[in-house]
Amino acid sequence: MESDMNEKKKKQRYILLSILSLLVFLFIWELVTDILHIFSSITLASPIQVIESFFYKLSHNQPDGATIQQHMWASLKVALSGYALSLIVGIPLGIFMAWYKPVDFLARPIFDFVKSIPGLAWAPLMIVLLGIGFTSKAVTIFISGMVPCVLNAYSGIKQTKDVHMWVARTFGASRMQMLFKVAIPTALPMIMTGCRVALGSCWMSIVAAELIASSEGLGYMIQQCRGIYRPDIIIMGMLCIGALGSLITWLIGLVEKKIVKGRNHDA
Figure 1 (cartoon, one colour):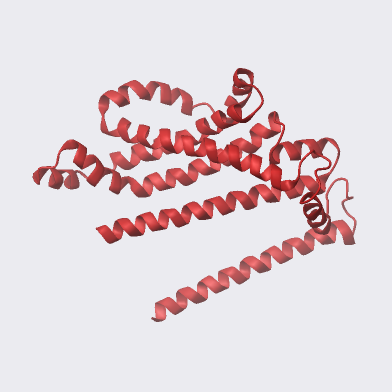
Figure 2 (tube, helix red, strand yellow):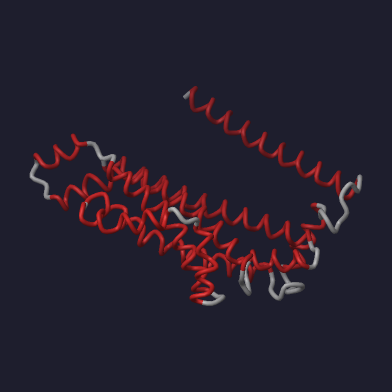
């Protein structure tokens, strides 16, 4: 009981410190822009200007041709599509590479080559091959997210303890049963970590791809406003990117907790 109270107090203290640090940051930001005028509005917008621009962009498509909701949805749609594809392909590939040596021998040379190339480096090639649009960005995101999915699934399966496999074999489990009943459940924490790492890679890739070549999305909005010296919209776009990324990461964390909790309950 006492330990729970101490933990609750620590959590409350952490929240208060986080809010305080945020308020101090906003005060300093406002101080150097609107109060002391160390930076002009062309080089660094104030917090008030950013907030005003956010509410303006909720209902206006100027100066980049779309509202903030449209840009956010465009980025989310592509990012989640590429991310889902990276999970669907990457996790099974990592599992089967770790479990079946022939698959490992066949896939490893190609995978080692792909993982050594930064995901963002694929963006120009995908644009040349597939054009500027949904498909080229989705494929770039897929490649970026697939690598951590494969690596973590592979490592998770390889870290399955021999004693667990021996016990399953002793009770007459087949190789397929050992994979699905022992190895994969044991590897779940590593696999979920790979999912979170992949999300960060995918979200970074979509913004970069939109900065390079796109006709919509948060990265496109930032790029367009850079050319017309609108730091208020640029900062607003950066904050939206951070907020969306944090929200998705939080949701994945909830899913991970439920999966791990269910696994522990079954055990």
